[in-house]
Length: 561
Image (tube, rainbow, N blue to C red; front, side):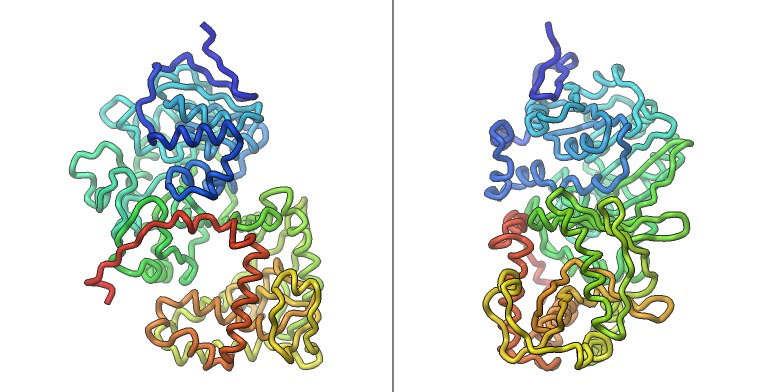
């Protein structure tokens, strides 16, 4: 009997398959298989509202590993490859990908999704049955897998046993990559059901009801890895979690107050909120304790010859039109840190190349703001990281004093964001302006020749040397834009960042009025902003498809009053 089956260029090995799938997401897997066979995955993703669809098909899933520097000659073992959400990005990076998967249906979905990849082999069967045939690998992944070890590994401590087995299949310089929920994650403390049991506080209560699927705290998983012989550990913290991450923080570069804003972004199942999650995250960040209560971990574990990974931070903008999809990384090179912007697809290469041009064109527009000096290097925009404090961070200490908050906004705008009179001219509408911002604009507006519309407070930093730097030049246009729109946009973004604190002190209309903005102006700028949003994210915000998957949020009325 021939135990091998080909789906396009992908090989499926049936030699260890027991002839039956023992777990499934149900009928949705038929829908997934049909869409992958017919090449309609993208259409299904944008039409559905069901969690399994976005979980299995969204390219946002790739963010959990896309940033990690797998080498072109690396051989990768992916344990629990499922429907192939991670397989594709691994195959693009590595020499070969060997998948181990228990479900035939999921393996077929994976194979059809990646049928044009000639470096993928799927070994179908239970891991312990397949394991004797495996060799040693440069990289092994356990993405949402370790927590299930009790179900498919025999032994007194199946989690340790699993790690021991995996260690034996790593080369001396190899790395094990684990993505797993943190049982002490802030969302679980705040009323989100445990991802595997579907019940409240299963992990917080240490699975005392005898649950077989288990996640772990920071210290628990560290202890297991050290006991299993892993000497090298690096912890990363995907936000909001490892399943649909948009940002990856590290132990060396942790989030700051104001950066984590995930409140009400719930996709898998309905949940309760007992407190404002963004507020407690701000406090944890300010107290340098976020890492212990992060929702998920990504852990890089190695043996004695493992080399340190130098990437400290990664942020993705996938929910844009292809020509604007980019990755921003912070990387350590020797004693220096660098910010690197990369295209996520070939369509975005021009956008990255334009950043240096934008920087040079806009430089000198504002006398009190320096420009970070970047260069295009091998298709990426690379600039030295500026140590200091961003303008938006400064507002955390005055978040509960709306009057002082507004006064500080006005002060920073007047000191840094207003051009000198000889830099301003009467605004004239152009075809470029109408393409990006629409037909509506304020009368008698002024503008600069070159317009940096992303001059928001989080993109401005007071450096350790006392100078103020702008460091993001993605959205610089070589045509006039009403300058008060740029100011309004900076003020709006700041209010939204601190909305949870400000909304009961001052509503946004009063906030703009105190800053000298009329409601007529604000209405025009809102419409300009909507057009800009569609310019970046597609008509109707097409690329922002995650919103359609958001689930109902129940507020604990004894807390929220």
